Structure formats: C-alpha cells, structure tokens
Length: 272
Image (cartoon, rainbow, N blue to C red; front, side):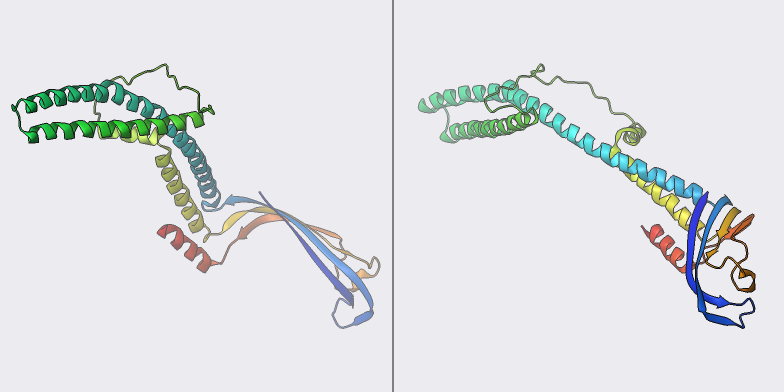
C-alpha cells in the first residue's frame, strides 16, 4: 500500500459562511493534516515490472562484485601456474636444449678447425646457441618477477624461499566439445556474461515499467482529514469546518498525465 501524509497551514481572518462579511480584527491559525492509505488493485504492470527490474539490478550488482573477486582469484592462479610453467620450461626443455647446442657448437668448432665445415655453418650454430641463451636470460628475469609477486601475495620476506608441493606441470587430456556446452558453462560460471544478462533484464523490465506509467492505477483507499483552529465557538457561521475530523473510503483512480516525460524516458531506455 501507498501511505501519504499532507499538512496544510494558513492564517485566516473571521469570514462568515457566505463570504460576504470579513472581520480582520479576529484571526486564527489553520492546520489541515491528512493521511491517505491507498491499496492498488491493478497497476497495469507497474509494481510487477518495477520489482523485476530491481531484482535483476541487484543480481547485476552482485555479479559485478563476484566478477571482481573471481578476477583477483584468477590473477593469483595465473601467477602460481605461470611460475610452475616457467620453471618447467626452463628445467625440462631450455636447459637440456642449451646443453645440446653447447655440444653442437664445440663439435663444429673442432670440425671448422680441421676444415670439414665452412665458417657460415659454424656461425649459424653459434647464433642459434646465443638465441637460446638470450631466451634463458629473459626466462630468468620473468621467473624473478613472478617470485616477487608471489612473495607480495604471501606477505613473505625477500630472503624467503618459495617451495611448492607441485614441482612441474602435468599434461592433461582435453577433448573439444560442442559450442553449446561452453555457452552453458559461460552462462553458469562467467560473471561477465551474467552481468550483461542481468543488466539487459533490468533494462527490459524498467522499460516495461516506464511504459505502464502511461496507464492509471486502480484501487481502493482510506483517508482521514483533520482541521485545527482557534475558534471553538461559533465556527459554524464561518467558512471553516464544524467537524475536526472527516473520514473517506472508496475506490480510487490515479493517473499520471506527464505523457511527454514518460515517452522520452521510454525512448531513452529503448535506445540504450
């Protein structure tokens, strides 16, 4: 229900009921409070659409919060698994590859000294070797950066060592599934997708609410009106009420005639 309270205030002279005689030597204050309770029966979708719009707007805001938390968790996991990937790449691939190329370069230097190969062949092997050494230096730099990030996350000191229970990445079997499978996963777990969906639904029902604003509200209401002034006697001869309180009950029809504003609001919501 809708509950409204209004207060009227005035300062009036003595005015007889026929409005033909005024006495400006006699004045009174005049208070007219009123309380109206209206219970809508049919609003053409205003209440239901407003509730749905608010519901989806709350869900959208919650999805934004969860999305930010999930992003932070993803960043932490990315640092953790990134460190294991870099160390696995260095220990199990790059180190062995550099050792092999060192052996190749040494053998080619001997072959070149004996005149078995050309200088171009020797220099090509050296270039490949130094490329791997450069990659190793870049990899060590990246590992140091990831270590520093992990220490910050764990609130550890610089001299602390990082030790994991998992010391390498294991290969996993991955089967490509139909598109709808990943779409359903996105609907269930991707909070960026959820945020867009809830935002769309909130706008959709808010637009319906704005559209329903052009229609009236039908319901019943109860109203209590009071009147307070200084003249207790002889008030029946004036324009003021005899009764201090009045009551009213019945069906009511309220209509917002601000069509231009509602129309522009609907156009903006539809365009958005």
